[in-house]
Image (tube, rainbow, N blue to C red; front, side):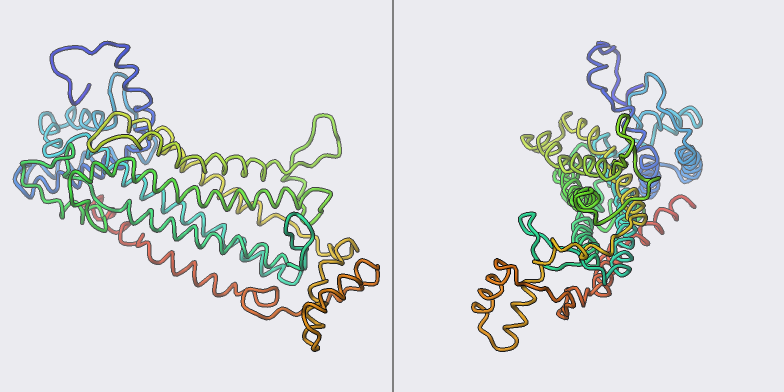
Length: 444
């Protein structure tokens, strides 16, 4: 069944090629196709295109189909082109011609647009919640190990004193910036394209504000041409937000792999969180961090994939956009898996609190000595030269009792302010309003 089929059959090879993986990808969209249809027919009833007696029956059957999607029982049957066709076929089987009325005033173009918006909105909420879980683990570790010093590096050379409080906390604050990017992506996503039809509106007197409110969108994509132009653009913008989070995880994973190696020995993974070698019995490999790094780096390529598919398309719909679904929809499962595993392994990681017993790290206290001499009145440049000469001559003896007090330093991590920053960003998403709208739609 095809919503567009007429009195001829399409060539089977053409059909295979053009349908592609749509049936597989559309399973991601099934519950959202139902939600969009529920809002759409509620609006159609208000403008007289569906009877008052018909709406309750249609809503009842759509709720039943929605429940099937939640139980994992929804399937797109063989020979059915996409999720939209499957839902309409199920309604028609149960309600006869009444089921065919749900497509009035819309096109598959704006139908898939709203499905993608609703799907992405929900997935962004899951990502935001998982980012917060990882953030909480990092802050907890930062507070736990705030007094454990470690070397800081520049050019991979021992540089100045740092701490595990700073190291864990740095990645926590990085996630705050990532969350801002995610919030912007959510705001751009949470606008209603329904009613734009094939990208040029409809002669039916549609009430687009009504569907906007029913689905919990912040606003609509007002211009119907832009609503269609937003396909691909939304996915690209969201992909950049996901890539930003992935970049933070990839860097953290690289650090963890480095610091876990025997040459560093700064952190340890419990043996049950490592893997072994088929030939070297002593090996305890940090495969979990290596895979987080690789998967995160793969996710950082997503914006470029989306951009290259849609960057030379003029306004209007083109089938090219179908291919974006194949890289975009599965990306959420990948990033959620990485976020959950990173939070899990950060919780399990163990810290070496005797790193500075090794004299190879003594020179990192040189700046502390320069600053001490400068505080006593010696010009900074003279103090710098004296300490440098003492190091060269082997006379330097470090004072490891350091006192950093300014905001964001070893002795003043500002983790409480970083937590307030994260909480402030999270509250601005407005997840509760969306949940309320969807619940009311499903409970009608």
